[in-house]
Image (tube, rainbow, N blue to C red):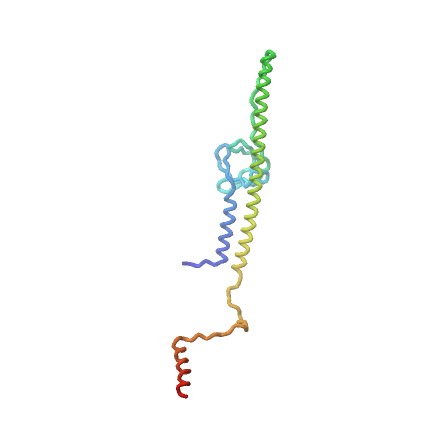
Length: 195
């Protein structure tokens, strides 16, 4: 098995981490079915095609009807939300009783439309809040990854040699074999036998 140089390994980890960040951009479809990647669906976001090249400048319509205007390099310059079509209202001159019924129906329709608009605004606010939370979490994760990479980079560059001098407070301990210990003990005992 081939051991990889720690510096090369760190470079590969950095490459892997940063490629994953760019590949994690959300994907969308245009009206014609073309797949695109959008770093952020907001002014200043970057739009790329599936092959990674910047999307061409001009107006493009997403599958949901939202129009995005791109500048050079695939940068979003403007976003035009899908226009909601208002229901057609036909007014006929009728009697007072019929007119009152029509007014009530119209008021009910306007109330329904206002409720839908309010629900859409609440949904958009919730999505925007979720987006800001995710953006903050990803920012913290990115900071943590940068710190981790700096730590690993520092550890890779620390010399791995032993110190040049052994501190004075270390004692040298000789290691005797079992046979040497027995011989030493026998000599000690024989000194007392001879006396």
